[in-house]
Length: 260
Image 1: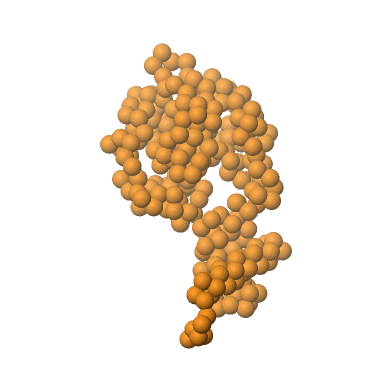
Image 2 (image 1 turned 30 degrees about the horizontal axis):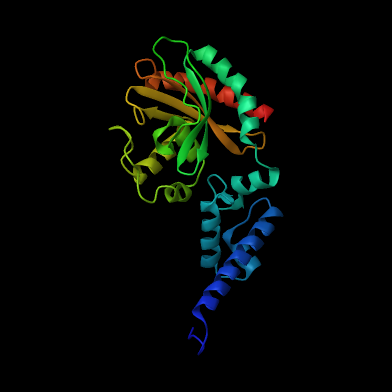
């Protein structure tokens, strides 16, 4: 479409941005009144082309505002928007609720247990209870580690869409050890395995000689709010042992969720 003489390009850009925001908000309001919708439903509702509606839904999905139904093409409200409408779990409350469960899990497995939260591209250790073995992994309360290098961080990243995970690492992955994932494509593949398996692994990827296994912690509404991990020297936590511990971690995560 030819530009009108004297028309301000900045004004054109502002008008386009405002129209996109308007369509996004109208889409979310429409979804609030429907269990799930198709691309054609959004296209008809907004009066735009199907390709435009698809791009809009893809963008909203990338930020967690909508999600696709498993195994289908229909869209519904996503975890980020649902979490905003229900109100977030504040971190002091999360730590207070989870601490006794971390201690109980430590007593059951004998290893250090941790609670991690996602903080931009990093995982942050919000709380931890130290294991009882003479040779043990110390708790790291307050430490930040790139999420791709920890079991808890991978568990949290696996909750995101591949597009949203990629946006956190536009400059690639910085190696922490020789075992750190080499690039973002490898990370996306690892997150797919994590989702299918139901737990995440860290095998020497942030500290040589330290392994970890982690699962997501959800609140009672199903929103992912943290990750729960067991960390131990690699000689006591190989992939087989991690698989044995995973059900116990999930049970602990469910107990935490029931109290949030």
